[in-house]
Amino acid sequence: MLSTRLLYIIAVVVAGTVGSLLVMQLWGARSLVWTTPATASLQTKLGWNTLSGRPPVLVGHRGEKAFMPEHSRASYWQAALEGADYIEPDLALTRDGHLVVNHNEWLGENTNVADIPSLSHLRTNKTWLDNGRSISVTNEWFIKDMTLAQIKQLRIRQDPEFAWRPQHFNDMFSVLTFEEYLQLVRNLTIDVGRPFGVIPELKSPKFYNDGRSYSRYFEDRAILTLSHYEWANVSVEVNRSAHADLKLQPLRALPGGVTLGPAAWQSFDLDTAEYLSAHTSNVPVVALVETLPWAFTPGGLDKLAKFAAIVSPWKDFFVAGAENVLRSINVTWDSEEIESLGGFIPPYKFAAEAHSRNLSISPYTFYDSHQPMAYLCQKDASLGAFCPTDKQAEFFYFFSLGVDYMFVENIVEARLLQEKYANRVGD
Image 1 (cartoon, rainbow, N blue to C red):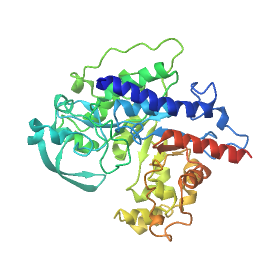
Image 2 (spheres, one colour):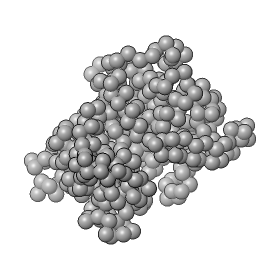
Image 3 (cartoon, helix red, strand yellow):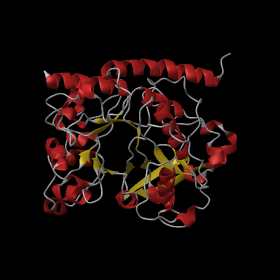
Image 4 (cartoon, rainbow, N blue to C red):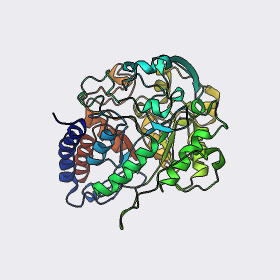
């Protein structure tokens, strides 16, 4: 019988080769040369409406979760082989201070933790504030309650909600540390022959900093790790003495002529985003603003531009508009405050308003075609002057707006649509 490791290698090589061949057909023989966010085949005479004038940067959302369990080693490999420009990890913090990669603060939905009797006593309920909103999760295993050794017993699974995603890679891959992710991306840069951007999101910083020796423990731990792996310059000193226990592996030297891709931070917590911006001046910050009404006003963009380089809203803000989206997620606002900031920006003008302040735009998430697009207008046609009916209509609309980055799943599909749009524009 073939070993699990060999099955993994075969699966990744076969699936990745198909994706890579499609991408290389699009990109041509020089496709593996880093020309973020795409190659010359997409640089039409008419250009793009992005801030840079180049095609949008494609960010592999949690790697390539359309095919592989999210945030797994295979998901990151798949994203690289399919030609992602950036590969995204979400960061969490264990009880014993290790940074690990997982989207949720809990583990029951995407791992086999429920099948491990020795961890059953860790199942609990928690409530915390996230950007002013109360989050309550019951009957779950939380990363902050577990040691790294306990988490390393787990194996990652596809979320069972998405039954159309391949399930045969379940229980093959362990949860990665942030360090293992960075080592992997450095190795991919060497093995695949082009750099990849890293774009870690710090999940719920106040939740993870609660009970630590100081209020920026999580942020500083991430900064020191990213700096060690040569993606970040520490421009304002952090509390190194509190992290004397942080033991990082010696670097594997990059071969001559090999350079790392860019880096960016993400956070929904704008206090954290501003802190990261101040302490790592060479790493731009993505401000995630889904629940912040003021961020969708001219005055709000002025405020964000003081520390962020990229503004990242949920994609429906560009279709249904701020008022409709905020209502749908039960976020209220002070009308007088919004008016004083210039009022809500119409959805079709938001990208241009951001660009006028030298802010890039990065909507999320553009799903694989098997998954519903999840726009409000698909349930109520009155919620949006334009409502995408298929994947091509969706992508072409956002390309026309000039979005600079896109968090995507099924990267090959996204790249094909990008090429198709480029050819259309160039006709």
